[in-house]
Amino acid sequence: MNERAKDGRTTTDEELLLDYAERLERHRAGWRAVQIHLSQLRPYNQRPHHIRVAKQILEPLVKRFDAGVYQLWNNDVVALTKGASEDDIDIYVRHIKAMFKEDPLFSAPPSPSRSPPPFCSWYDIEVEWENFVDLARRHSDDRRKASAQAVAAAKSGAPLEDGRGTMINPAILEKLEKAIINADLANVLRRQQVFAIIPGAKPAPILTELFFSMPFLAQTVAPGYNVTADKALFQHLARVLDARMLALMPRQDYQPMLKNASLNLSLGTVLSPEFIDFDRATNNKERGPLAIELPATDYFSDPEDFAFARDFLKERGYKIILDQVKYQLLPMLDRDQLNVDLIKVIWTPAFYDDCTTTQGERMQAAVERFGRERIILCRVDSEQGLEIGGKLGISLYQGRLLDAMAQAKT
Image (cartoon, rainbow, N blue to C red; front, top):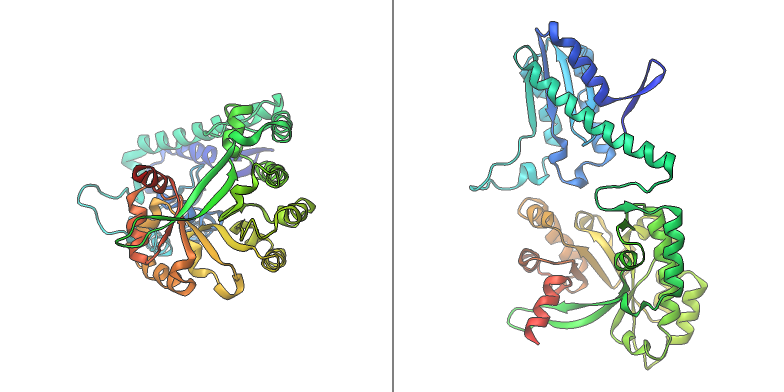
């Protein structure tokens, strides 16, 4: 939340903007404002450092025209100036556009069916003061509602809504932990195959990922709660669930599932005593090779431990899959430094958009560098995923669309 100290209390940018806008009712001449819709960019272009740089680009307006720059709750930025022409302001707006030139908002080919959303909204305060005040009031109200909800939740100990369900509180966390330890998790176990798709041939399953569905477990034990809302709590629950999986898999009724399979585990789990016990109980000729999927976030947050765990797993005969790789990061990864067997790249509609721009050439080069047979495009739920994957030369896929295709052929 963007807040500033004022009169001994904390004031949000939205409140400051509304206060200033209301004061201009009798002094409108010469005032002009622009709302820069950074919220229209892809989420990966709305990270905090992007917003900070955009605001820094507008700093010369503050010095030249005594302007105010305000960051709204949705990441839009408003510049309010006196004496600046639209051209004076647009110089800096163009700099911001240039910073995001690869974003599909600007780089995607024009569509005959729809126009792209505007990147800026301009206000001549002298003639549009009412509209500008309405804008400021609307954003101030939205911010106030979110703040009031957060304060009320903190005082009452009630869980906080985040728009996708209720975030976990300590009581629910304890309930979920007990459920993981005590429940029969057979109903929570999920299997999803990875398919090889070669032109002219039927999709062929080559690997089955085994994982426990945390959202399904949460909805069974504590319906309405969003287990992903708090990253730290979610990671804690994932480790508890990992340990439970490692304890179950050596059982005679589970061991057959490990053939041609992969287990989705965290780095901490692989380095735990529970994994050592699992390896001792299952690492035999009957089981055959097993792949371990490690999340890309673990690699970026702790590359030394990742390398240690990778080398340990390889020595024990496991294949390594780097999981949950955002497609934007693939061109930046070093194949030799990673030294993994496969990489799972997450499919999103934005992937399709970006591959129609110059980003597509970088992605093609990255796929060639890692090897087409080493890239799995996962979470594919539309034909666009297969289309763009085919253009890039990718032959391995996973997702709901592939599951449906496999069921249709049986």
